[in-house]
Image: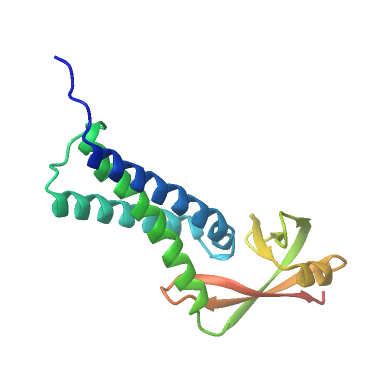
Length: 176
């Protein structure tokens, strides 16, 4: 049995969803390096992506009356695309909100600098050996990178994010 050709409105909606997915991917690439500065950033990233994806799938299925199925053709593709779009946009949004509306730094830790590394554009990274022995990489600005190039220790100020996830907000050379 052959499948019928997709309707023009299905093609249009699929095209719009693919464009939104592309834009969401670009936004995530721009916001993604800020996840480096979140303490325990992986649970933050995966939790927000999973919640947004689930929300997007359920809302699209409910709003447009498409019953959930594992088909990826025609109108059945749309809830999956909407889920990915919502997952990306939710991840970008919660990261932006968490770091933009963070409280003032209220504690600090000192760590040994492993390397100060140039990234793309104005993005620089500092890799440090944390007090518990594991290595971590953080996003820094060029002026901070210049200040840390000759230092052996870095003092990192920790702020409480607006959504409850702590993040590193300030870096400065520390004296041994």
